[in-house]
Image (cartoon, rainbow, N blue to C red; front, side):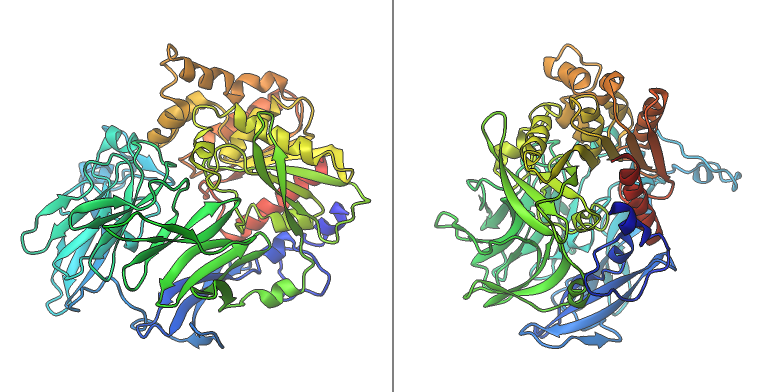
Amino acid sequence: MLRVLLSASIGLAVSTGVSAQEVMTPEKLWQVKRVTALGLNKEKTHVIYSVTTPSVANNDFASKVYQVPVKGGKSQLLNAYQGLLVDSNISPDGSKKLFHEKVNVESVLATHRHKDLSQANAYVFDDLNYRHWDTWNDGGFKHIFYQDLVTEKKVDIMEGKPYSSPTSPFGGSSDYIWGPKGENIYYVSKKLEGTEYVTSTNTDIYRYNLASKKTTNLTQNNLGYDKSPAFSAKGHLAWLQMDKAGYEADKNDIIVRIKNKEINLTEHWDGTVNSFKWSPDGKRIYFVAPTDGTIQLFQVSVSAKSKPKIKQLTKGQYDVNGIVAALDKQLVVTRSSMNRASEIFRFDLRKKNLTPLTKVNDAFYAELDLPTVKKHMVTTKDGQEMLTWVIYPPNFDESKKYPTLLYLQGGPQSALSQFYSFRWNFQVMASQGYIVVAPNRRGMPGHGVKWNEDITQDWGGKAMQDYLDAIDDVAKAPYVDKKRIGAIGASFGGYSAFYLAGNHDGRFKTFISHCGIFDLRSMYGTTEELFFVNHEFGGPYWEQSNASISQTYNEFNPINFVDKWDAPMFVIHGGKDYRVPLGQGIQAFQAAKLRGLESRFLYFPEENHWVLTPQNGIVWQREFFKWLEDTL
């Protein structure tokens, strides 16, 4: 069956349509249109959104912009939308605008240091923070500017400073906002340099006063992340805050400042917040957060006089990915599931129901037989109840036996929810004839703070046992082919594949590791965010007198178990991955090959920790399933 399904997707050309009773394939996945909400129009009557269509032939993407009434109705194509959206970068009085651009601050490039050598190609560094995510530091930093719309004079409010705002690599224009009256600019930045920068998560929220040109740190007492500043209609500032220094996956709380008093609205709630929006009247905040293997919508009351009250607003087998806008009686949100890419929905605050505003991919999915996604509870070895998603192939037949994949989630502290990935796509995997087992193992948000933190400095402990407990439990079913079980994952999931390869007692017939950590020592020596490994590993590998650190680098290090590897290993890595550098994948591939194991190395020179371009994405999928066909 697998060979038949795969042979149907060998050609690179993508058909324009699909016929009934077909299943999702790698090529069809790249026909799925990507819906992005841009915001409301100024009258707050329409949602403006973009639809991005991948082009495999051109290896790029094309986008069109539409608007749809908030109350529901037909979408309308917009030839231009500039001026239609509420522009948060324009000052309250309409006289100025905010923007950011890159400014050269330090002499790092050889051509800056040696003016007579214009053809030189070299970088000179005296400290760490020399590269980040997928980019080398060239001496430039993103700075915030404001510009007078009449005189066109612009002012760099961070002039000469070796700091960035928006923050890298994923910060955007939401990292800076106008104050309610336009006299101040509020922005997020991590004002540290070199070694301090790479060992810290201490971003702060700053206030810049246009008249005095004075900058004030509003969150200097907090040593973790402070981000996402937003004002209510009443002028109260809210933001997201993590308390623990150096811990990127700490509990994320909503903080509100009312009359110079800070209130933690979610302090006593056993969860972590992804993002939030103020209600129009400023009396409550709506937010999205992981819970029970999904991401759902919540609200919390805001008052200086009473205890915050948190209420869950949605519940279902889907993710509410984000809040686009909050109106008096309704919210505009985006929603996805493992079987459907994100679309825009309206949530009625009185009826508590979700209504689709866009149905961009409905016709496409209607032509496919879709997998079935079920929630399965597993009792772990230490007696905990662990939610596990099980995804069954289309037209699943319990009387047959199916090859099965144990999915190993990355992060390690990232939610295994109802996400829709364009690479690790469960819909595609199941549609190729595999059962997919996706456990919410230790280290995932949505099951309480303790469950999330239980993985720290215990990478090879409870989380690995959780994986084994999940696959052992599901494999009891007669339709699971116990002789054809594979383990697959990326990042921490790739680490998990490498680790389990030496610690699986014959459970798995094959492994796939994408951008996985193979050697914790060399990972510590080459990754660009040292705060991550300091927190997760306990510290540097040379501090072996610390029992926890010693256990991490010895008992939990995949490289130490290569002599026990006994199954095929497929290694995938991106050349511009500086989070988990290329050497990790190369070491693993060479080890597997020198051990005499069936192994393969897929290298993407221009991709980072992810694979983003259409043709590379299809290569990834084809090679992924070719490997499974050959080894499972």
